[in-house]
Image (cartoon, rainbow, N blue to C red):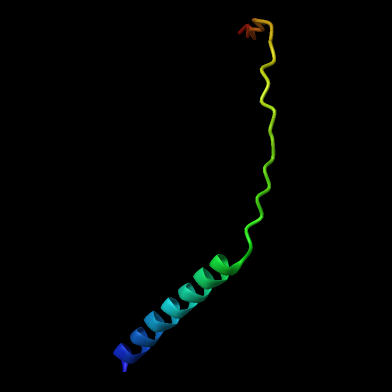
Length: 54
């Protein structure tokens, strides 16, 4: 009985995987290119040190 349940689960997962792959393949591909401007910002060297007096 256990082998039947495990076999059924394996077959179910394979079928679901195949359906997801078919759905993914059949969708039209939308090629949206987003341009991201990566700019460098000059930051001045600041030395802010915290001093703790005991």
